[in-house]
Length: 112
Ligand code: 5GP
Ligand code: ZN
Image (spheres, helix red, strand yellow):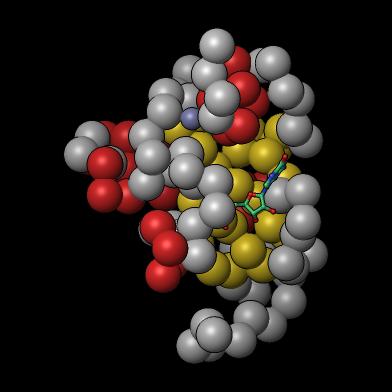
């Protein structure tokens, strides 16, 4: 059995607050939201991080899902941010690829 938290979510063994799901991707609310809207979009199959994402169709699906969620959450027009954190300097803490979708307030730039 996998030890990966997000694989367990993809398999349905742990049930996050899901906002979107299809055969390929799952999107759910972050447990520690950094903005009024903070959703994570993951591929259902295990990919550790962006370095290992060689499937361009899947990359497109993750990005397209982020835009669908932004619309669903009502933040499309005011704006939002999408982020892939990668490895240590990127601040990645869960080593299953995930796309952050953040919005609902003015976000600072550049990040710290
Ligand atoms: P990273 O720092 O790897 O880019 O982002 C990992 C994200 O996963 C963090 O924002 C963190 O709050 C979120 N997270 C960690 N554990 C859980 C969990 O059990 N459930 C949910 N929904 N989010 C989690
Ligand atoms: Zn995984």
